Amino acid sequence: MDANILRLIDASANRAREGLRVVEDYVRFALDDALATQQLKQFRHTFTRLMGEIPLSDRLNARETRQDVGTGITLDSERQRDDAQSVLAANFTRIQESLRSLEEYSKVVCPAISGGLEQLRYDSYTIQKIVQTLVVNIDRFPQRPIASILDVNELIVNGEPQADVCSKIAADFVCLTALNVSDALFVVAIQKILPVIREKNKFLFVVDRCDIAVLAHADGVVLNPGAVSVRQARELLPPCCTVGVRVENKSDVEQAFLDGADWILVQKRFPKLSMIQARLES
Image (tube, rainbow, N blue to C red; front, side, top):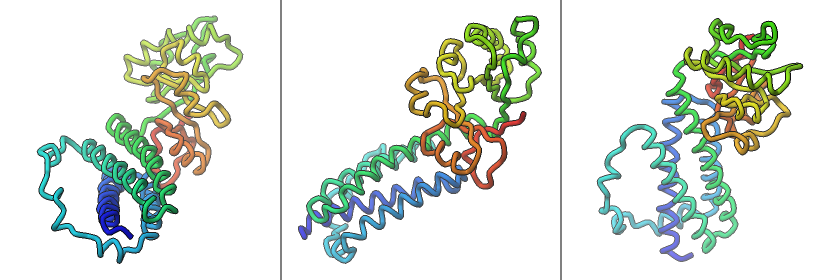
């Protein structure tokens, strides 16, 4: 094997592994999130398995850290991080750039692992989005929000939506659905109660209906099982809207997690799954 290529691969593999550990430590000990930690651990194990196809002895023989001209070159920006999010962003970039280098140069010494490294790079983008969502939600909602699902009929008296009804709702998330109500009245009802929702620092979501959420300027949607996918909902909604998913079991939680839902709505608490951002009380 080409010693120079092996040296390059060894350095890139070390960078990727170091970056993974930085991210995993934060997710495990700061975010305390079991699902994200599980994803990162599985990612790390897959990476280790792939790199095991290139004998460590060969990599060590090619390693020349003291002769590396790059070890003495450090930018001031690399010595400072503004906050934990900047640490995460820098290390995800470190992982992804290392994987790209490994993906290309492994074609020279071990083509069989190149495809697996490419898939890991794609997976790293998904995991980065998941971790970023967790960071934003935990910062925005230090305590898990409580959500209630209401039918719009509960807000209508004598044919007119009553905004004051919402002022008595204790939930942080108001998830509105509609049975036997016209779309026009549904939109009017949301627009009428929305100022009260905003005044109370609550959030209003529409169950399944992305079109209604857009027309009424709601905060987003919550999707039931069998509804459109998270990706499809995002194509219909403006960037400011969030997408929640209603889940019924652990499998649903994991799928919503991987699909990139901003939050999930559950009817019961699943142990050790801190991805849960909302609890349904109805």
